[in-house]
Length: 324
Image (cartoon, rainbow, N blue to C red; front, side, top):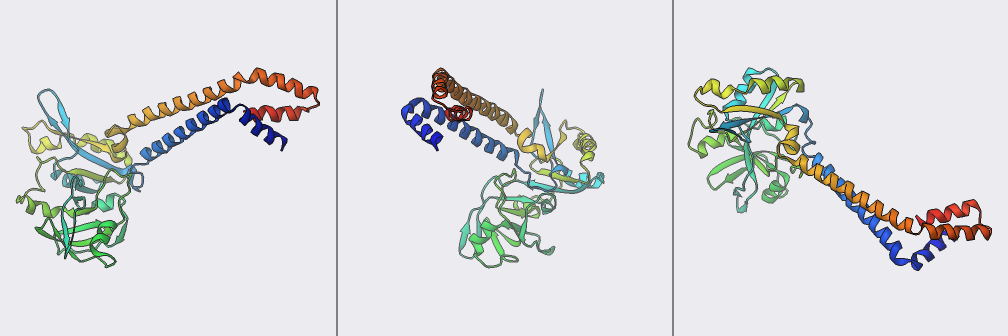
């Protein structure tokens, strides 16, 4: 109790150095904590996918005069070729990410969610949890899977499965599934996915999904074993040239778990903020040590007086730590 009273008196007696030391150390620790939480969030991107260590992405490189330009996507015919030619590939999916919003109508309700397009096998490769469906409706070629927010906005508490939505005021789509909202720490962000079979009709091109030219499709594959990836990455390189000999375009592949941190360069940000966090922490600690050291001579003199007045060794130790 005496030690606590002494600490409070000392804080009030030397307010500026004491409060500066405490505030500086507390601010430094708080900054480091927030930086750590941000780094943890960055490192957690896409980690909710159960098969992340077996998912790979195939993409195209476009040859130019003296260089090559990497694309995010690959030709749509690549996905089928991968699955047919490599037994190690269990499933493939072509994805048009939700780059923009589209108009969805249901009776008198209209919303503009972020809509992409994909082979619905995407939901067998990536982990997006269904809360309703999916329905097995092969007879309906034009389908859509939406998230909970979109479903609630259009249907309220009504079951949306089997209902028909109007897409872009032009096409009727059947709702065949509802998934939980995509986590914020996902590289694939969307409110809904339309089946790819709608695209040939939209673009009035019957062979739109069979070409080796259009590099718009993010092409994902699921491996039976991660160890099979090097063989596939090497084997797909010249696959476009096997079909179109006159082109210099070629394919590349990378593991999906490398997309956010390495392919998009975010690992550099983690390194920079880690260094900043270390510098802030070191600065805060050194500042606190300097303030304590500046009082050390005075503390030594005071401890000598305490001993002469009968203070025990334990009492002196308590007062020393109370200074810290």
